[in-house]
Length: 414
Image 1 (tube, helix red, strand yellow):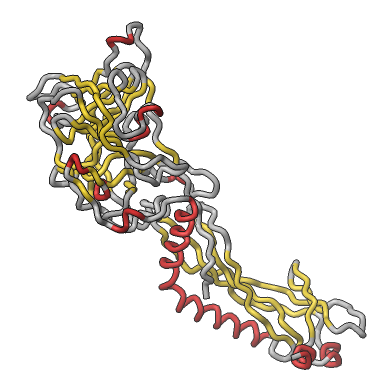
Image 2 (tube, one colour; image 1 turned 90 degrees about the vertical axis):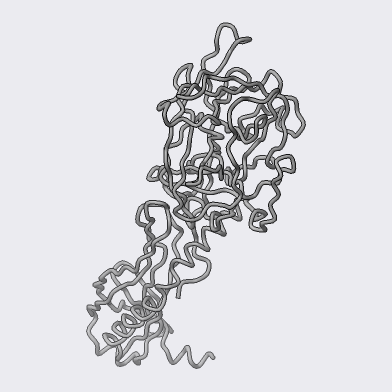
């Protein structure tokens, strides 16, 4: 009984901004100092990224002379393949228990994602050629995709004043969430992780599988805009899925059709509505049953003189923790009694019934969990004085007034 035009939230998210470090007095020697929070658990292939000696991100070595990070970590003028990044980007690999600190310089922009749009639910990556090979062992890229509830390990560089601290966190992938309604398959181009502790400066952080392969990189965290889910309740991060990479230089070529799914605002809005409808559908059999029972109950209380009709209301999703998205009310349809019979009836009548509706709850990952909900209604129905020549009768039900025709007049007009 729920209509197909149930309104769901339009989710608009913001890209994770680069963190700006303090400028040094001698910018020519500026470096991003990175240390390991736990040297015994500190991967050798994760680096701090310093852009134009001021903005910092995170990156991962995927070949002896290639590093991956976010496209938005690059200065605007370098966001094109083949651009020279000499003197603009440098990389700091921290000392760990087996290797000394190591620095590298950028040479050329090798491959990038498409132009960034007004929503970060689009891929955001850049693969950068180094000026020379480094001694670190590169990470292995996996294009297998990320499944629902998969536990991922993220190594990220958190900026603190003039240093970065390489830390490890674990996060779970969350498909079918209102926070990212486009993440429906392992190969979706942008995934969501909830809960996930991500801060500015973590852009480009690699996401490792249980097999220690890089499956994605962090690119953004969720912030509400327009009519979103209330993201303050969720610690959510978004990442570019490496299952959709096409980089011949790294022997990566994706043929997954889902990677080409539209990711504009209209697509996000439509996907949100689809998630809600699919979640609500299993409830519809009972919903229709309960509404029908109450419909009969209302009729039974006024069967001698009044017929009713059901009125379904679809309510825009508010994004709150518990939000009504649909309900069915009842209103008078027509008077089955004659005018003479009405005059013999009492002017006041109490009627009691339940209004049934659908409430949308979200789980801890932002997935829709609709529930049926009822509200007891106790109404007082009264007949108002009316011009005898009128074709309708005014009926007051609590605070609502209806101008109700006679059923016979409706039949005669057909």
